[in-house]
Image (cartoon, rainbow, N blue to C red; front, side):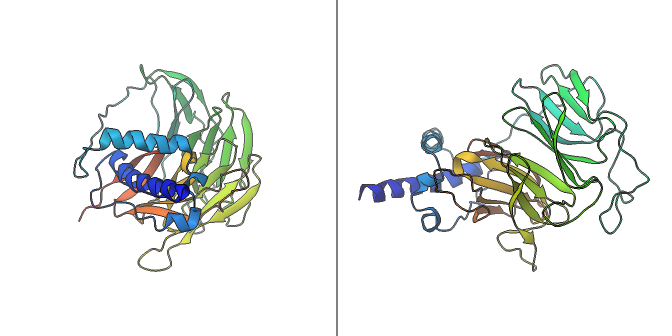
Amino acid sequence: MEKDVVVRQNEERLHALHLLLCIQFVGTIWGNHVFDYGNLEDLYGDHDLFMGEDALGDVDQLLERNEKMSLETFHKFQAFILPVSKPLGQVTGIGIDSNNHLIAFHRADRTWDEESFDKENRFNRSLKAIKNFTIAVIDPESGKVLQESGDNMFFLPHGLTVDSDDNIWLTDVALHQVFKLDKNFKTQLILGEHLKPGNDNRHFCKPTDIAVAKNGHFFVADGYCNSRIMKFDKNGKFLTSFGSENSGILPEDGEFWIPHSLALIEDMNLICVADRENERIQCFSAGLVEDNRNIPTGIFITKAENIGRVFAIREKRIFFFFFYVEKIV
């Protein structure tokens, strides 16, 4: 009986959490776009199996702080232009390390245009590696560039993630590769084959982003061609993948049209995907719960739809932050 009460209480908090996720998104509060997540009890049973008590406590605090907040309210965050001391190219990925330094991945003097790829997603061989630096470490207060790296290494930078150990994870859509660099920019891991797209477990096709768990497992959004999310262990061994391209006019759960960005919420065992051209965010089980209670990776959990083209999402414990282009009707 007591367990039933706990489950019901957790269900109520989860319902509230999904509303609050909508509230806490950067941009417009979606009064009409509340998550639809189905019957979580059938999937998880006791919700504490996938959502830790710390996270549940956070939800309670959020509820207390936001109990009078209307879903019709609009939140806007103050924005400013950071005057960086050195010119950058097209900035495609940013992250923050443990020193609160901003790390930017950019394309220097290169752009992505109609001449970049052929119809088989192979990069233009007449274009060599970018000669200039493509990684910049920036003081977020002054805008001073503190360090630079990545020269003569990348062809068309895309995604960047900084993990809990300050490793820098990068994707290059021209190389069709994923890179792990340590905080001194020394290469620790490279996945994918140089300049060769593919769709098996050893290849990518224009991978877009990476999300890294504290245990070292990581997810790759793959990407512009393959419409899938791939999961690897800390050594780069392939574990599993999920997702497929759209099969009809209306996309089904688990289908993607350019999975462009990832957010991993470990407290909730969720890996969330910015499904860019389907104008939605989808969340799936991340398969990270331990103690022999592992829930399979890639089970659909929830989504938010009709929000415009979502280009980037990031997490802060149980919050989402995202950048999108609003749908114009």
